[in-house]
Length: 344
Image (cartoon, rainbow, N blue to C red; front, top):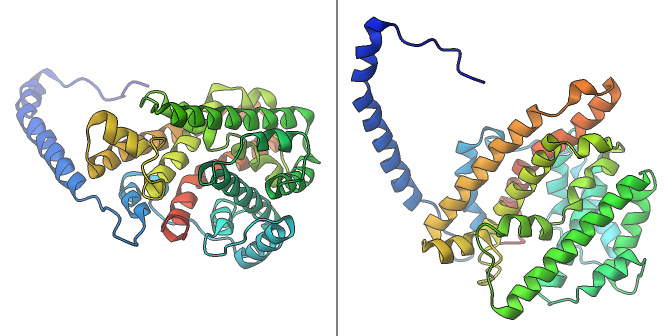
């Protein structure tokens, strides 16, 4: 939309021109200050958290300015996650605190929704560790799709799938399977890159990272809230932009926090910026933060474009619930990164 401001009157044109040098000076000062502040971005202290480098986002992004409210039943959610993890054979480490991330993202909903999402987060991060740290076989994806339960990850997946999919349509199940296949393809591409000694370009990386982060994670919000977003809304440009930008923000924040833990793996936005742009660690981190801030703006714009007025009132409320969970995710994830022992 064009600005409603009127063009300056003839007798004010000279005044407008005379302010141009001042505007240029202010712009130069802003650039200089930004350059100076970039050099002051905190680097992780020995034993400290690399997530501290994300703190400038709380001043740059309005939606990340204040901490998320914690779910009042957070301890019950934690107990449910620990019990489920032990029952399915996964590690249960309270210090990692996946229940706290879910407790913030689902603070406005019932405890069952937060607990189910926290269980999925626990499973997803265990899968990530299996693939990255132990060079686990990608065939584990095929085992999950076939209903195998020989591996703890397969057994945990089968248990979650039984509870999650029971109330969802065949279309939703098919969409989830596509997301799981996308993660498999992305993980395979990363494995091939490592074997060939190749790094993705800065242009290729966002789409690749969107796959490894688990595209189906965002589809899981619907069954957790016991709603289903209409197919045509899912296929709209606004919805795709909302999901993709939310995925990018959380994935890139995770890259900043996890960089020391990954010990030089090139599949990290900060590492790629350092190697391909010739930047130091502080400058590369600032470069990534700029892109995170930009994607946060994209999230807000996409949310405002959602076709809620074209839906029945109840469906519009359901769609809004899912969108609100997405919008809460970046700050919920940031709070978790700052307090969790996972990347300390």
